[in-house]
Length: 91
Image (cartoon, rainbow, N blue to C red):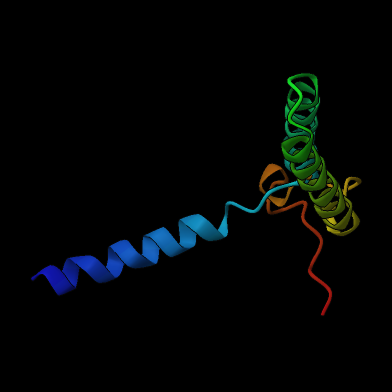
């Protein structure tokens, strides 16, 4: 009985996680948080930890740049367009 319940729950969790990709804005927000922490740690005299936070911010900015390159800002989300208006997908 528990095997019959576990499989659908595992599938639902996998599908839920697949929809949780971060957008470029999310990466930029994370980078901004790291920069604020870096400035705060620098002010506290913790230069090594500040450098680590700065490196994390740079990594998040790079991820944002990669995500921005793959996002299409000029197209409405497919869920916002009624099916009778949607153009057929190109193969």
